[in-house]
Image 1 (tube, rainbow, N blue to C red):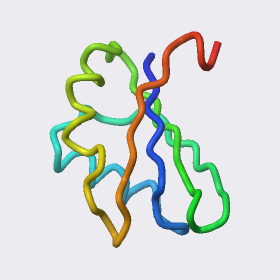
Image 2: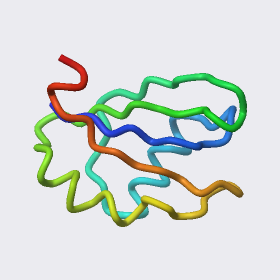
Image 3: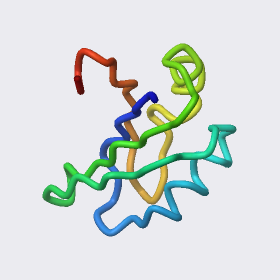
Image 4: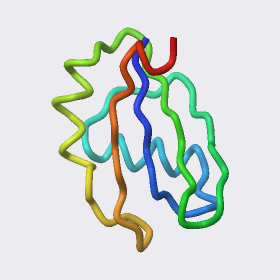
Length: 85
């Protein structure tokens, strides 16, 4: 299980919109999406991928990091096991 932090997403973005966005850029299916609600400038989501290792996500990350989506410059960070336990 590997996790990706998707930051600076627009508040109110649905899980389905996130799934479609990542599929467009060749990401594997997402197991779980946890929305982290902040003020509109700090909304984020933690995406969990089953049977995908960190190396795969590290190679895919540049496809979406700093991409403009829904009038926002998206950030992406692969979370290591040290980060989330």
